[in-house]
Image: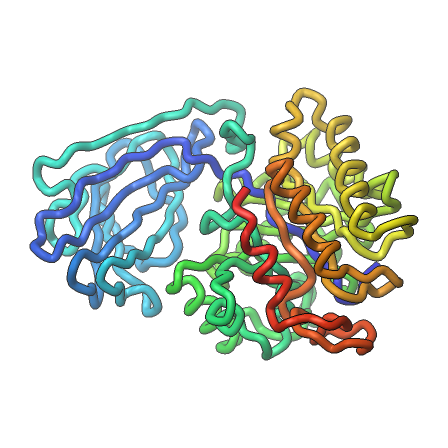
Length: 444
């Protein structure tokens, strides 16, 4: 399949299962903290505190609370210390400075149902000593898979649009794109096995802690952005191949997610994988971390949809209880007529296949589990996605309220008419960032 089009869009499975809004603190500066549950699976949940500066900027923060009758699990975007049931979180180096009126957040996992109490932000009660508390609760059963009216809530950072970026290339940086367009959510391609085997590296060669990548993702998160980690793709070695057990693969997934502070993973299947092992590892990610999962799949034809092997992988995921966003690669398949129409037809055919895999779900729920990922400009095998073609995909997304829109790739989003297929430009006439600015308007 596509040399440049290896993707998967992390299935958005987190639900706002509960919300506890803590009134502003009593500080004269007006800083406040609010707690929310991003997902709940009965035996535990994924929580988040959002810290907002008031009229005065914050140059550091400390948030502490009690958690009686439950245990704290992993956490991200903060440093933490614990003493019994009392837990104290402080800012990381990239999110301590909060401008006046701005906010930042950190997340954590809890085993049990108890929610934080006795919250203090910088020594002041988060509830202001008498503020009201509002609670909204949704009961869920059967594991970490939770549902809203549309079945799948927004992906991390409330992103509905997450273009792919070849993170092994030095330009454009995530912040280059964010500063130029306002797009702040991206899918990082690709985490692969390295020369050490089941030890992830970007593109198989760039260390996970590479300073350029780490600093870029930190800056993006400080600006309110988020990232999805993509594995697999058109080139190997797949982590899914070199990690021989579900436990080893799970640990590799955790390592790469933690490296960039993400809790969303996308598995791009362009070669056969040990699907039972992979889906077992993905199920464990959802059970222990509430991780959102997506599968990026090959399209066999505009009327057929995904190839049979892709369908088999999804059937195994469904049997194991993994909730996934299904992301067909709307690129590099045979078609007749108009290419924009062909991409829409392929999306509809994929939706039909999803109905057979998840027969108990409604059409609205299935559409919320559908992603769309075209390749902008010239595709590897002949088709060309023009701006008009992209608008047809966007219009379909809006009409059907799909779960996510992406494209390959942000690094190609500039013109080079007649330039052929390139990893650094679209091969067609266009303005810089034209496709990013087009797709970023999608909100679900």
